[in-house]
Length: 220
Image (cartoon, rainbow, N blue to C red):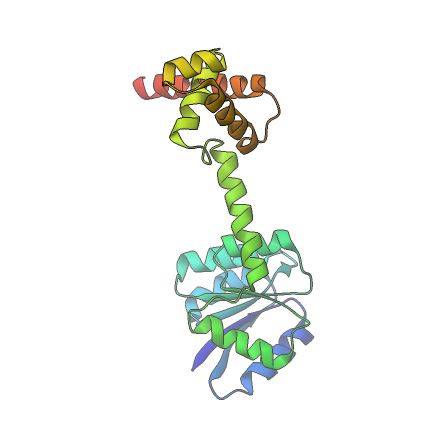
């Protein structure tokens, strides 16, 4: 039996979803809430298998509820139910640990299937959504570490540019042809989304300064 808790501030919607799910032999509604506060208070005590959460609640967000209750009941599967195809809310829901995200326009049979899917420990995100999430995560990682996409050789060249060396001087230092260095520099610019060599030099200087500060903090 799949134990389900419903969270939606609209009583009519809640009753409709409850009636739909309760009609199934393998699903049982164990509780309902119309606010984030009530949901956070009741879900951990009832320990349902699935929480169907409205994204927008009068006193908060279903995403926050998901994050909070999963910190207390890690095995809980949260299925976000919303009227809006909001990419920001979707991303936040995934980051909060939601197992699925469906629109309220979903057919009844599909909602039942979605509950069963997340209860079985599977994710319910379509491929397009998953691709969007992965791309956004990669972009965030890139912002945290601008050098993440660079090879060791490219990182070394970036450091030498920061020291003010020309392509010829870098080639001499690294035993590379000047044309090869030029190609590396072009790749650097592309990967860092920069247009000018001076931008690379400024980045190298900033990274060196950051490392210096980190060293000072570590040493102190």
